[in-house]
Every structure is written in structure tokens, then in C-alpha cells.
Length: 186
Image (cartoon, rainbow, N blue to C red; front, top):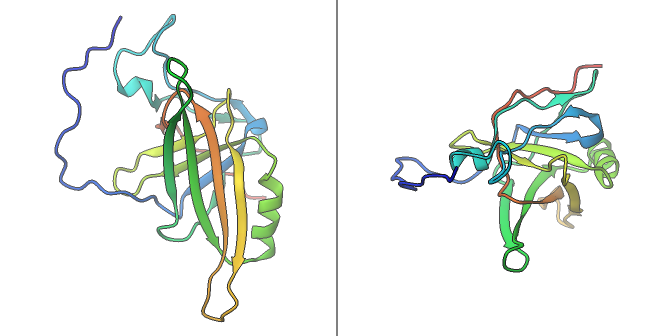
């Protein structure tokens, strides 16, 4: 059944960019028991609305004893970019989530090392809408495309770690509406 599109886009009183920098969550793909995904355009149970094409409504479930690691980024350092790529009739979306963490503590440097070669699922909530955007899926996990550290030479300078997490999907980074399970306390 085709999707009936009557109207797209409405005036909104308060549209803004930005992400909640205190609530980025990172999970290792290997730790998930199941991952949901947006509905397909075609198939046995295709999407019937535009929303279903980019929304994950089911809960992701972790294996026992694990969950998402909560990461605190610098205020206004979180950026999501989506670029369509590929030849005509084979387009995909490349999603890149960039964020910075403050300092060069051993836990941040160790985290950089731990996630650099892992398959990831990353959640990041938009600031104004509250939409939780997801990087990575069971079919094409997110991965660290780039990580860098910077310590300026001047005392009042920057001391940050920057991460770029990337995936490639058939859709823009989808909106996750399921339950979020955080890493249990040790």
C-alpha cells in the first residue's frame, strides 16, 4: 500500500538545533539481544506513514548485566550531519555524530581506546524536540570514524577529546522511541 502524503512541514513556534550534551549513550552491538529498526518501504509489513520510515518504536534489549554507557559531552559540541551518497537508484544516507568531551583524564583516554574498533549503537537526544536520534543498526553498526585529542599550549586554551561516530543506512539517523537501558552500577 503506498504512503499517502497530503502535507509536509508546518510552521513551528520554537524550532532549534542542538542536542542534550549530558545524555549521549553508547552501547556495543555485541551486547544487544535484539535491536528494532524503522519499517521498510516495501515487503511483508511496509510502512504506511512517513513517520514509520524513520521511527523505531520497539525497545532495544541488552544481554543480561549490560546497557548503554552515558557520556557527558561539552555544551553545544554535539552535531549530527546526514549526507546522501551513492549513484542514482542506490542512494544511502551517511550519518555522522560529532561530540567533544572536556579534558584528558585517564577514563576519557581509556574510553577512546576501548571504542575505537567496536561496532556501536549511539543515542543522542535533540535539545528542543527531545527526539532521540540513533547512529548504528544491527545491519550497519556505528563506528568511530575519527577521534582526536587537543591540548592547547596556552593555559586558558582548549583541552578536549573529539569523537566522530558514523554509520550508513537507508535512512537519516532514525528517531528511537523505545526504552533506554543504562549500564547497571557495578
